[in-house]
Length: 263
Ligand code: NAP
Image 1 (cartoon, protein in one colour):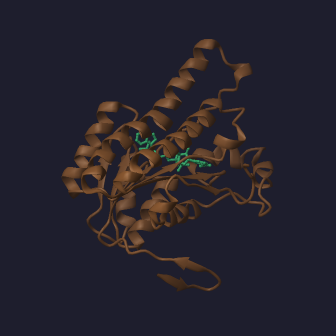
Image 2 (cartoon, protein in one colour):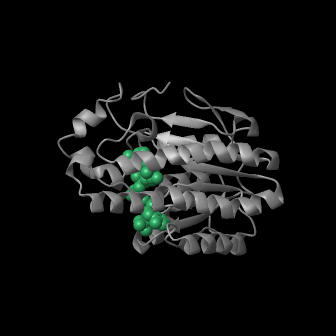
């Protein structure tokens, strides 16, 4: 269905019978994704690691009353498996699963000892990549059984452009894009959509220090709109992807304000 707004024609989908689960759903982009799906009538599972106050706060901001919080460190394979079991037990199914939780870390190669270099890679890959791979395995078992589902990964422009100051971060996001395409192919026969949304800089806690620091103006000027994304804009892209036909599976949406064009 298409609906006219002021200047745009936007697709609207009905999510009222949908269960949407988002890792890192308590803050930043994940919080905006939860709020967007809540506004469209979905019931949400909000997965977070440790910040109870932010998690409790989002529940008070939502219109729906059946949303639930799930506290788990998804970089731990056992906790990742358990949280999927807990979600299924709570809701009976998962229609849309968003691998959004992630962290960054500053570790330029010319400033790192070999030990520190390895520690950064180990930590970043565990959260930004391995967690997504493990959660995708576990959630897809349920989606295969019901022959439907959407898995959407929040990756990054850095996967394409490179991240010289955060090389493990860039590598983890490139790995998630590759996983997206591998799983899109593998799960298409089961009617499961797998896609990714790749933002540039977004106004969240993760980027706050850089956006407010001396590099801030330079970062904003990367886009001809001279700003970075609002979390709500990334959330809108995720909703759009979750409304996409299965034929668009394997797609990676660039959400970077024309700041970088990949070929
Ligand atoms: P954020 O504001 O720092 O929020 C991170 C969220 O992830 C929090 O809810 C946090 O929970 C959760 N989380 C972190 N580690 C976790 C773990 N091990 N297990 C479970 N939950 C965990 O981050 P954001 O900026 O919204 O980023 C969200 C995603 O977008 C990330 O994948 C990031 O790489 C990507 N992204 C961000 C930007 C940007 O400029 N912000 C640009 C491109 C891509 P707690 O608060 O409880 O720890």
